[in-house]
Length: 376
Image 1 (cartoon, helix red, strand yellow):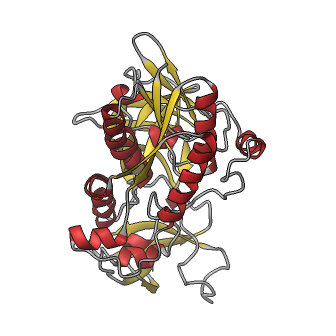
Image 2 (tube, rainbow, N blue to C red):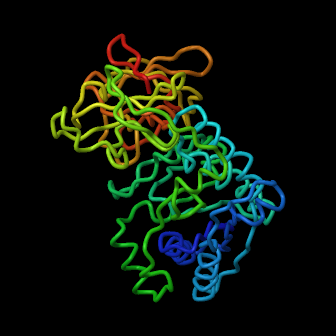
């Protein structure tokens, strides 16, 4: 029997994944990852979380133990706190300092779930690791391919775009062929303790807390002016890091008598002036772009073809956009999307697909509309 160690998070998806692996006859063990702890970060890293709450991971761990008990599967508890801080959270902070909007879930998969976790699992004798992602993998003799999850609304290949071939070769995704409703049904039929547990949201491993208050512990706020596209000052922002391109809520500038009643949206950031640039209308031309430059390109299996018709997502759950790509120096790519796309945001990933295959992705760096670079 092949030995598989599954990342058991204490949620329903990984719980059902564990059940399915056991049913398939694998020698199965579970491993719970503890990647964030405010008190530990204070002790070993000297940076207290002043707004810390009781860490929800403790409740998640108890749920994971309950599931492992029901399924009669051994469970390990491991700490990757320092690895998460160094490889994920420092990246997260550096991107916000630059006025960009990072995606920590992508880096968590790259450095923690499929790297630190994989290394630990192999040290425990695992042949494979498994996760409760809505994705699929096709293992062939010489190559493994990452495939979209069957459930379009839950497909999580976007967050797996930075995996390397050697990581994917060791990975299984037991629920990728299922829809969420089917996962819930399996959990209920097998009386798993997490059957009715709601899905987690919020920042990867940091939980559902006030994001602004959390970020203030690590990055000092720098208030500045909110300005129109022509430079008229409308109000004050709390710090550019708290806003993302295309954002509508939380601007606090409604009801201006000299302007129409159309909603205001974030259209750009001027870091040199510390100004937040806003415009009116969801379909404002200043939120549109039709090509971008992306860095740190990663290809999971084979190298894509230049000027070939692929599709891409510029954010999670976005409708696929027709694109072509070309290769630039320093592992950069140019991504052209002739139909145009709204609010393509630096710091986020552009993920390239060839049908159901996720080819890989890159981090959006510069955004353009025709020959004009957007102030994103």
